[in-house]
Each structure stands twice: as C-alpha cells, then as structure tokens.
Length: 350
Image (cartoon, rainbow, N blue to C red; front, top):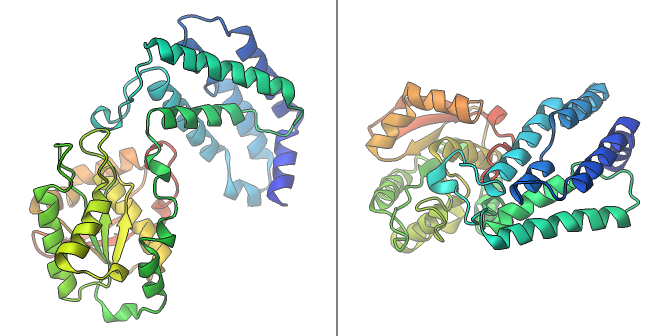
C-alpha cells in the first residue's frame, strides 16, 4: 500500500470524517470564547475523544502498517502538539524553563490579534477546501509549528542540510574507512554553553575539546562528534556544536572529514542519543564502543544512577550502555539504536 492509499484508507473512514466535521464545528462555535485568546489555542489541542477514535482506527490496520505508525506513536505525537500549544500558545511553563521559554507574551495585545487571525484563517480555508482525506489534525500541526516559529524555536530544522555540507566530508570518509583500525568508533564531546550571551565557547567547553584532541591524536577514534545546540543562555544565537567545530578546525587543525557536528542536543541525555544517531548514519559497526570525552564532573555524572534514571524518565530509553570510566575524563559508550527514534515530546530536539 502506498502512502497515498494508506492516507485515503485511514482518513476517509466515516469515524475520521466525523472527527473532522466535529473539530471544525467546535472551532466555529467557540470563536468568541473566554478568556481570549488562550481559549482559542486550547480549542486547537487534540482532544481525548480524538485520541481514542483515531487510535482505534490505527489499531484496526494490519500489523505491517502498525509497525510504521501505531496508536502508541499517535498518542506521543498528540502529546507533543498539545505541549507546544500549552507552552507557546497558552503561557504554561516548559519542561526546562531556563532554556525553552517562550519569547512571545501571551497577554500582549498583538498576540490576541495573531491568534484571532490564525483562527479566522482556519475557518476560511475549511470553507474553500473540499478535500475529505486531509487529517483532522492538519490545522493543529500547522498552528503548533507556526507558534514555534513565532517564538523563534525552530531549532529542530535549523541545520536540515547538515549531512550535505558540514558532515558530508565525514560521511564520505566513513564509506571507505577501516573501522577495525581504531579501538573506538568516535570521540563524543558534549557541549558546555556559557551563560554570557557574548561568549561563543565556554572555558569548560574548550577544555573538553582539548581532551578530545589528545585522544584523537592517539588514534583512539576516526571521528570527533561535537554535540550541543543553542542552549545557554536562553535564546542565544550561538550553537555549541558549531562553535566547537570551528574551534577544532582553527585552533587544533583537525581535518573536516574527522569532525561530525551534532547541533541539536539540549541536554546530556540527548548529547548521547543524538551521537548514537550520527554513528548509525555513518554506518559504524553495531555494538562497537565509542568514547565519551568530557570533564571529570560530567564524566562522573554520566556514569551515575541519577543519569540512568534521567534517561528513562526523559527519553523513556537508554541512549546506550555507559561502560567503564577508563580515566576521570574517558568513558566507554556503546550506542543503543533502539533509542534513536524521533521523540516529538521534545519539539526543540526531537
């Protein structure tokens, strides 16, 4: 079954068509709700009834198509959409207030005009559209993405061409690489962002890179993976991994083919998960260890039960097996590809 055929089968079912009509009617009937405009944003959220009905339809699909997209993933996606509306449309606190906060004040007059305009556009487009196989949540997705964009929180797509530019030399190098020539597949360096908005790379971040280069010069691994997004301080213009990449090239003359830039991670948990994703893209041998290189404080934290618990709470899986600490700076890490799936619950780094 093609994607178009799957879409037609799923979204043309009577139950789903009914959901589309009910959603449109709900939006139309409550355009003058209070307190405005937050109540409008709340109307855009995926309801428990919509979750249940669509989940039932997905459950009826054959096992083959449920492996691609099932009711469990649907509920995670619905959670993510509602979370974006809650934080960036209704003014609730995000998971990490210090770094993920909104830039738009939901009590501002212009925000009320914005939401009213978005609502009017939904209703206008619905009158003009005769497409009966569009997802009932199409507008919810579009509006949630727009609110991320309006808050300058498009971090997840900021480097969409990464493997065609910065990481292209590394990808090409990996295709002809003898992995057996190195004891580790890569040196993973988590970022350490400064709290000063004028500082591009913190002193501790530079120290981690110095340690990484020492290991790289010993030929412990063919790649250095620098990982870190635009995190500290909140709304900074500096991306940790981009600054780390520049530092490796300019200060230590590390060849571009040996640098993998991972500019999305916002936490130590996703430093490791995203590095695992990059190793999978590079085609590194499964079950071969990588090496985490960082300062002694973070190294001890990564090896602690607290970090294990945090992974299970925030990622719902382990990004990999944290092995022996060879030194106070070096820790063995075996990636877990089962934890590499996209996680919509963190819209800034899914």
